[in-house]
Length: 392
Image (cartoon, rainbow, N blue to C red; front, side, top):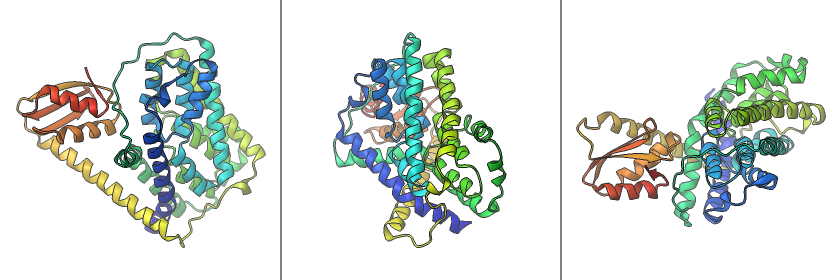
């Protein structure tokens, strides 16, 4: 089992780091408002989808990004197209997919995300839904430096590191403990039925696009039809309970219906097309090679060290929360723009590093920062804004 985990880790690490590096380069090289211009009408839908396909955003990160587009004037159709297509792909996910499943499968998955995003965005655009007000939040300017490049690399990986670990362990467990061909019976089921079965598993779950790839590869190797695995890879990252709730609140029931129909019909239909027209032999090797090059080992060690730092940081944050004094806080700030635990950790680090702060605790519910020390409220507000959030 440990050997299988290490082999999956070796195969995944170089491409995950390369994809995160590409994301960091895009972050520091592109203009700050590049992602938030001219996204209206059907042409705006196409631009939003084309922008979203390569971006390495998971289901958690794509929600504030899509709402940011809507806040800045993008149409509902452009925002929904971005919301459907972006979490299915990303440069990191595509490189990992190619490593595990081969380029034909990866290219088809990428094109599927493009088609689904265009379809969902276009139908939403045709509804002419009235834009709802989205709470505005400020974002800090992207640092155009080497430091900004590495910081964004880490920020891309941090929100999904636990899911990557889960995906690696699950892939190894499937390889070791499920006999070869144990689920080959799925191949005797009609592709549409097997796709719906995979869909029922994927829809409610939070499944990161990158972390789900080794799981899908292991399932295919054990006999799952490639089309059913494709449904898992498309529908799982594209939606979950949190995303469904966010779409309902921001866009309304009609747009939510379009969004879910796009994910359901698109993933099952395109998977059926794949099973019908793409031969299984087009897939890459699903076995884990033991003779990995030196750069794969170096990447695996580097990624392991990075994940260890995440664990230490999480444990430190938990300890500071438990040991925080129960006395009255110096300053309590209501913060706008916090969307996930990664945002919480980022803002806590920024506040703790500020002069005059002895302790800082940030929470999602309620969305606020509680700070103790001698720092002035105005200075703390500046720290919050510099971190990319707003003080309400």
